[in-house]
Image (cartoon, rainbow, N blue to C red; front, top):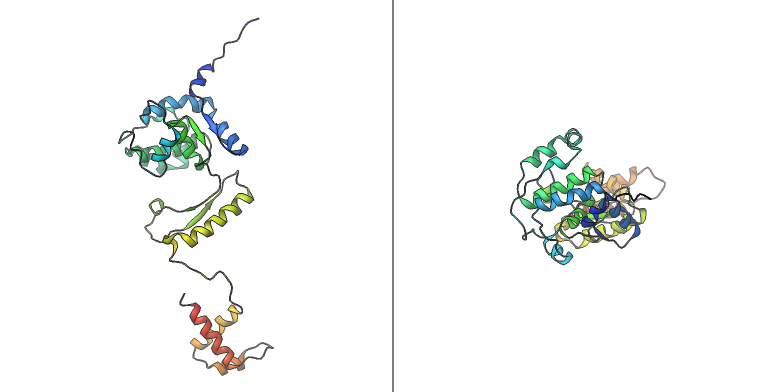
Length: 257
C-alpha cells in the first residue's frame, strides 16, 4: 500500500492554540486560524512585526490592547504581496490602501494590517485582537473577541472633532439577542459611570401629560393667560388656570435640565 505524503505536516509548526471559553467562539476562531492560507502568512507577519520568539499572554496583555507595543520596533513596513484581494479592496475602499501606503508607525501599521487580514479572510473587524494574539503569542483567547460589544466611540476615529462621545453597541452576524440585551445593560451603566458622558443626563421617566404641558407652554409663549388657555382647552376634562400655571412651571423646569 502506497503511503501518501502529508504535504500539510509543516503547518503543525504554526498551529495556534485556541483557548476560547464558548463553543461558538472556539469554532469561529478555529475556522480562521486553522486555514492553511492564514498559517502560511504567519512567518511573514512575525518578521514584519519583529517577533523572533512568541511572547506569553501576560506579556501581550501588558502591551496590547491598552498600551503601546514597547517591546518591538518603532516602525514597520508591510509586504502587501501576500494578499490576494488588493484589487477588490481598492474598489470597495478606495482610500484605505492610499492611507495604508503612507503609514510607518508600528502600532498604527499593525492595526491597519489587522483590518486588511479581516478583509482578506472575510471576517468582521472584531477578529483584529485575536489576530494580534495569534501573531505575537501563538495563542488565542476570547478575552478580546467580542462579536457583540457596547463601546464608547473613540473621538480620534471620528471624521469630525467632538467632545460629545457617543456610545455604540457593535453587532456581527453571530450576535444573539441575549448578547445584545446584555451589552445594552453595559451601555446604560457606562452612561451612568463614565464622566465623559456626564454632559447628557436625560429624564428616563416620561412626565405624565407631557404633550399637554408642552402645548400649554407654547400657548403661554404666545402671550395667552392661564385662564384663556384653560377656557380654550378643547377637552372634556375640566381645566383651571391653576392647572395651566402648574403645568407650564413643570415644563419650564424640565427645559433647564
